[in-house]
Length: 519
Image (cartoon, rainbow, N blue to C red; front, side, top):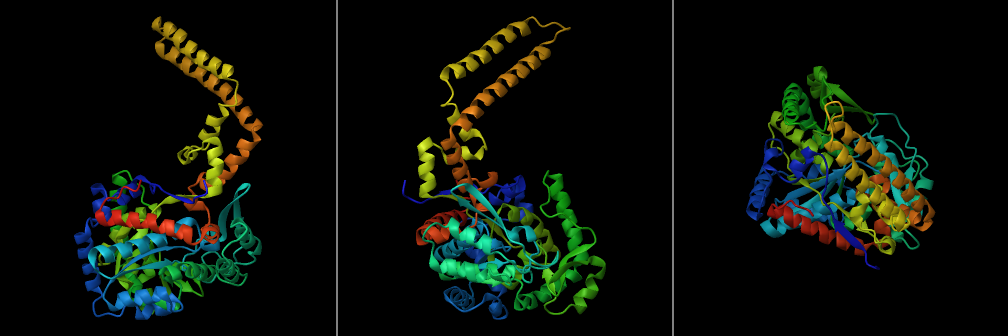
């Protein structure tokens, strides 16, 4: 029980996301055809690379990639060789964001390596830090697991609603930062501790802190981090954003048709249309405002070179127009909106980008595994918010009481079956069945009271379940969606990264082969 364990799990998501994740033929009209096999991936990579042949696409983006290092050197080599890029990204989050931020980055790295190995085509990962995003809720919050269960942290974040994370400042996050450090245990990695404390200071921007911390983590792993709010990126994107404005009405019409197609098949579009607004933001002093369709042609002519930004449906297309993107490693929500991205690409007369599912899993740390072993708790039992506790509580209740409840239920079924057999039009069988269900319900509630009392009396079980749930299913959420990656990496370092690399490598192999089943 002293071994760190990484458990691969299904990605989850909506029924629409499931179609894209599984490359289900029923979703081909929305998601496109996913490559299956090395030959198909090689053909896609050659096609993507050919669109950028003779064009130094990296030159305009270099300032947004930060200082030179192993990660940018690899990207430079791929650009010179006419290779391709596997992208992924995430909006800024406190303390570097949730675990799936790391899972995305390592999926992109693994898939790039798999493409290079299987196809002989140079490939590199690229993490797109969405510092142009304005989602304040994710930016100010983090969660960590501790000896008392999950701890939810929040920072103030200064700025106005609609301001990009590239200009909003963190404010006083000392308490939150120190809580994150404490969650890493007695001997966290001093390099990561320094990086966290130096990046997360009051006057730092939310986006700047996120980018700085991710570069400290991902740079040595060969994954460059691009700052999406950097003026160099916005300037490079300007021609494509202007075209999106010029074709604003066509884009809106294409999206409406796609949304209708999704709705007709019983799916809710991930991103709802805002009538009368384009997919492009005007940026004024860091403040973002959607440009009305009626004003789009004028804004296309008059906007400053770095005065525009893309919304969530335009961003994947923008990435594929700026960078030779062979695939984007997506989570379930992103996969869902890729069903709409294809419609945007069609209206823009551009090739549709391809989303592939990121790896998904749970990290079971040794101290958590030991706690689970003391009560025989399995990871799968935690999916139900009460099942594990109820199962163990049954061992604490007097067996005679449980046997009496079993006899009571059997008696109810037997005697009411005899009554139902004598049913008449005035007293129909359905009335008897209704009574049976009511009586069973009352018996169930009474039994649950006995079980709840047993759980409360077993204070050690209560403590264990609080810690285990906080570590593996915090707040009923998957670990990767809630807990910050920082304490895990600061505590386990190379050992954790190595296991995650193995898991994402196996996942990438399945993506190349065209077998999408993750479990």
